[in-house]
Image (tube, rainbow, N blue to C red; front, side, top):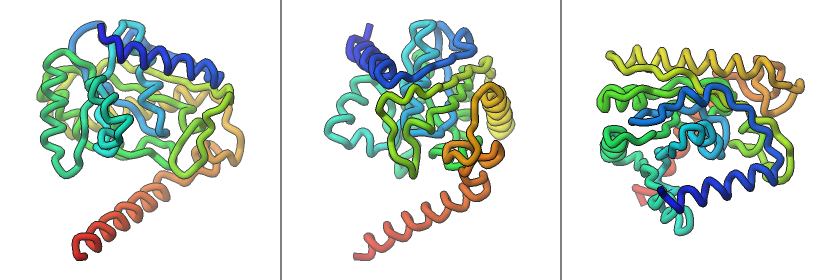
Length: 250
């Protein structure tokens, strides 16, 4: 039993109810009841991790998410994240984060990761990093793909939060566990293809108003295309690097 984690889950569910969020979950039975697994989640909004934990409640499991260092540095969220045994990701020392994740998997934990690394501005599945596959191979555990659709309507990059009572429908699909195999590049490609398929299935039964900012261009929305979003991401990354270089030169 982990009283703090259970309390946080209870608070989150109460907040979801107050917001009127309407969840539809498919495939929760695919979350392993025991043993370690990499939980790979698509990334369209800031609150994806809170929704991704819902399917794991069916087998009464808890997910240890890998989260950026800045979250742990915060004086309020940092102590909570450590108490919940989430894993700090320092991009300047990624090897240590990776080691901690593999150790957790070997202990039988569910470790949550975003293979896209950052929020997808296009709301399509971006190119994947290979970390999820490499961890699964090294720890010899399966990868459980989870796709969430609708979370971007609550709070996403570049748009205002909508944390009041919005009655937003959020669909979640859990795919069958993918057993690890080498090479990691092939496993990564299978994971991405699987998650793309899950996303397309969720979108079939979801209402997508024409021109809405949260709707992909492919479905008639005003979100940037995957190519346009990639260009925006690259420009933002270059700006960050330039700022760091300027600061180092001071």
